[in-house]
Image (cartoon, rainbow, N blue to C red; front, side, top):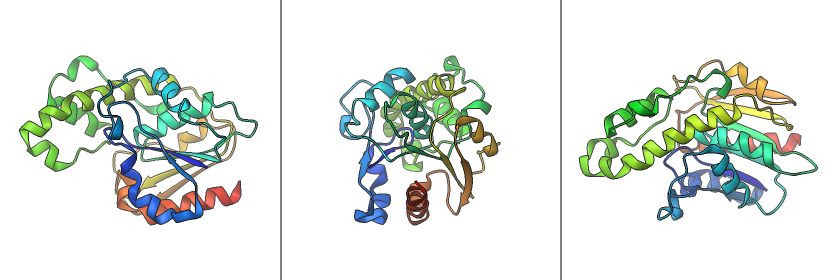
Amino acid sequence: MVAFIPPSCCGAGYFRRLRRELGDRVDVRALELPSHGRRYRETPLTDAAAAVADLAARVDTPLDALYGESLGAYLALGLADVLAQTRPPLLLAASNSPPSVRERIDPGAVDSVESAVAALRAMGGEIPPEVVSDPALAESAYPLIRADLLLAQSCIDLVRDSAAAGDLTVLAGADDTALTRMESWAEHTRGRCEVASLPGGHLLSATNPAGVAARVLEALARR
């Protein structure tokens, strides 16, 4: 089984295209946090330890691998730290720079839709253009965007010094220009680390689901 953790402001449905590419070759468990996806009525979490505990409570069987994209990459690293498995899961981290090289976010500067979107983009995240261009939609999305920014900072603090026990595969979209110092992901595993560039943008599973699926299958084949 492979658990998939989506980017900020996304629910489990984000992995729809990737699920189709993987078909029945992988037992997929797509996870989502409170206020995301089908859990939209729940209060968002801004504390990384609480978010990791929430995700861990939804894993009821040993995992072969954890895949996290963008913010999900940091959550996957945190989740790998707390899973009590005899054989640690593989970790696949996509579309994010290593937490050890990230600078801090100033929460006080995120006080409007515009500042929240700018801060998220500065971190390499993406907001659909239709959300930004529609004032009513942007205003309704602002609380979740801000909450996920605060969660991102908490995640950076939580996993900045973490090193997963299992092997690590890092995936970067060739068009994702915000990524930096990807080789430093090697500091976040006690096993083998591979960094691979794939065609695609920041939302890698959406822009290149076939390429991501191939890398997931390759990592599992080496396990």
